[in-house]
Image 1: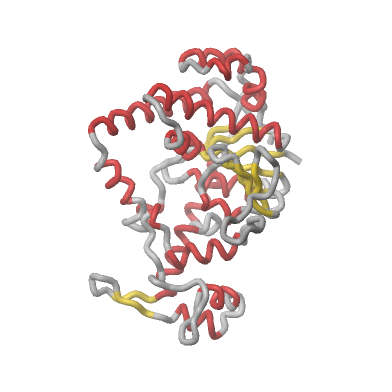
Image 2: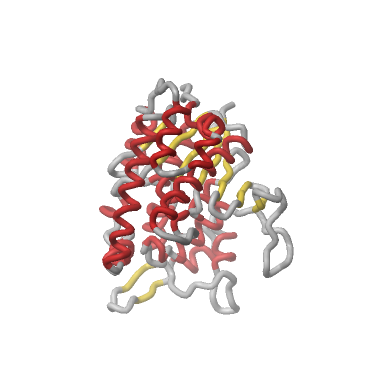
Amino acid sequence: MNTYILVDTANTFFRARHVVRGDVDTKVGMCLHITLNSIRKAWNDFDGSHVVFCLEGRSWRKDFYEPYKRNRKEARDALTPKEQEEDKVFWEIFDEFKDFITEKTNCTVLQNPQLEADDLIAGWIQAHPNDNHVIISTDGDFAQLIAPNVRQYNGVMNTIITHEGYFDDKKRQPIIDKKTGDPKPAPDPEFMLFEKCMRGDTSDNIFSAYPGVRKKGTKNKVGLLEAFADKHKKGYNWNNMMLQRWTDHNGEEHRVLEDYNRNVLLCDLTAQPKDIKEIIINTISDASTKNISQVGMRLMKFCAKWDMQRIADQASQYATPLQAKYLK
């Protein structure tokens, strides 16, 4: 049984940017350091076998649903000239890092113009059902994939999510819920996905299927918990919620069921349209074994360019996961 380290590459790199203070050079160095260190830690802690970097494409979702992530472009357009220049530098460095992992390591690098990293990570897990998987990402969407053989490692916050709960990576202790004072319970992947499909996702500009819906119902109105409990039977509570209608600020009427089904396609990482699933399968199937030598030396040269002396001093440790080949 293999243990694949699945890296949500852009997420890990750019999230690190927002937790580091200093000038651009300092931030870039720390983004690279946090990314490589997250891989090293996951590899050592979970006995990794091979690293898979998953990269973003334009995404089929933008053709399926026009508002998808439109807010991201609006946010970029609102950047000041100084922020735009910094953003440009980060993307240039990210492209260099992408070239490094593609050309100078034995890691698998997956990318397709129509796919997001999320699609590729979920697809890799489906293609390797009998193996273990560690997802490196801060993205909460991956909670829907958590299973006995799938866990998520957040290298920015140093937390681990498993089917048993949330854990502090450094102390190896359960994370305490500040509201209850008890250990934070394990995620319920199915309910979390259902709730997201109903509430939408403001970060991705996915609109709610039922604005204002409560988690727990009232005497006169069904809530998410009651509808979810009735989901598989398709009983009264489920139908009561799904048959509701509402009108948006433009006067357009919506049926909850139709908007919910739209959001399932957008949010469920295992429910892509058939043609997209085929692209995912083919992209993963095309992954081949690389045979790059002297990965440690190549890593040291890369580190020297970006003044990552701490990693260069331990190059053999950081190079170990980068030189492991994919054995189909």
